[in-house]
Image (cartoon, rainbow, N blue to C red; front, side, top):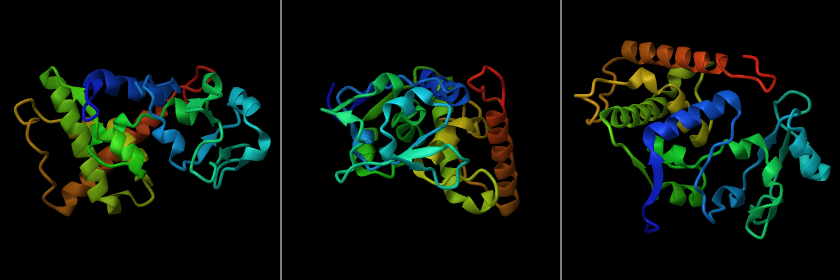
Length: 228
């Protein structure tokens, strides 16, 4: 397979796995190969206080309180080259206990949503992913995810105090969470989604997005097996 085209898997399988991962904190199985773009792109990694395995492996001097987060939440920074300090010889030295942020990170979300990442190396990698859409349902789902991403980017004013994400990764993930709002009939899903024609329609769509996003988060399963 050429560098210009990497198999991302079936779109429906990817979408299902992504949604499950972000409701249950399950790890996402990403076919990274030897790519370490996300580990070398100057990311601050959030670590929750219940991630005891991770916290036992990361030297305390590498951690600082997470801005705006509750007590006990911390972030791990990066070195002068933008590399995660846990990356050694292009491999994660704490892979079995890597942070949840890393377990659920998947650059295929940018390809799915049709948007660029906020880091050049990750954008370059994301552009190589190619999903399989073997059925009409898969094609419609992919069109819906991309339509959701376009709407979210075009109408930030609809989300004042609501669900509007603050970076491309969160926006792309939100599009995967609320794609159902943008599903259309199979006879239409091959064409680009039509933009809303007036402010009322935009506000109605935004309200639907917020409701679906809130329902998705309400369905999250905590580590103790209970809902949120």
